[in-house]
Image (cartoon, rainbow, N blue to C red):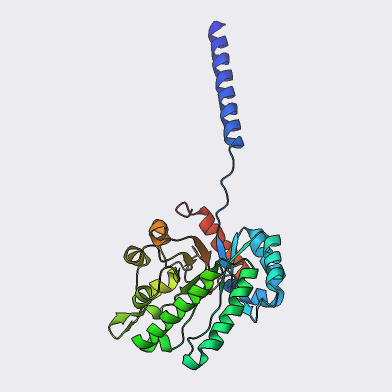
Amino acid sequence: MSLKLNVRKALSFMALAVFVAGTIVSCAPPKPAKEVGLQLWSVKEDMKTDAKGTVGKVGAMGYKIIEAAGYGDGKFYGMEPAEFKALCDASGVNFYASHCGQAVPDSAGWAASMAWWDTCIAAHKAAGVKYIVQPFMDKVGYESLAGLKRYCDYFNAIGEKCNAAGIRFGYHNHDGEFKDVEGQTIYDFMLKNTDPAKVMFEMDLYWITVGGKNPVDYFNAYPGRFELWHVKDKAEVGGKDTKIDFKPIFENAAKAGMKKYIVEVEEYNFTPIESVQKSLEFLQNAEYVK
């Protein structure tokens, strides 16, 4: 009888221990959702047909930040800055960054270009945007170092205006910036001839790879310059067409100076909304992504 009693006591104690352990685990706070951003160009057709509903869907699926690609004439996707900001706030997303810009003017067009930027910056400030990013240059920036230097000076001037409004200005690459002009790589020349206090770089992790370069090499050569990233792949991030190994890139985020990372999808194996959701799920589940 005593042996059976001892066994029963032991089993009861084990059951209690399992229950307590399970209770402790179940009471542990859930991991906070990662602050993943989305470039709305990824869902550009949805934004054309139903901008308000699309922003709502983006927030509902778990994105925390949006980067716009719909600025024009002082408005965002046809909405006044306060209206678009209110939409983002109601949808649970931070209107953090925006793509827009103009080609470098000649001396005769400088004043008009600066006036355009004054209006642009004021609209972004009213909407609470933290970053304005120009995602292009015209042929002037690709054909000679003299033309490229004009762009660097132009970007420094815009960055100074943005700084005065409490906004950071930056440039977003494609693959063409990794070609050489007059013996110098375009992207390197831009990094060397823009003022870090006025111009940051939003590195597109896909396009730099297409251009034949390694992001981490640039983080080592120009630490702190890459405050925003476009996390992008051939199609959905982490999908079947994956070309990019994101792990070593994210492991060097601090050296890059990365503040926020933003998903962009431009080719799709699903609907755009499904594609950006799958990209979000991949990043949320990737242990190396913080």
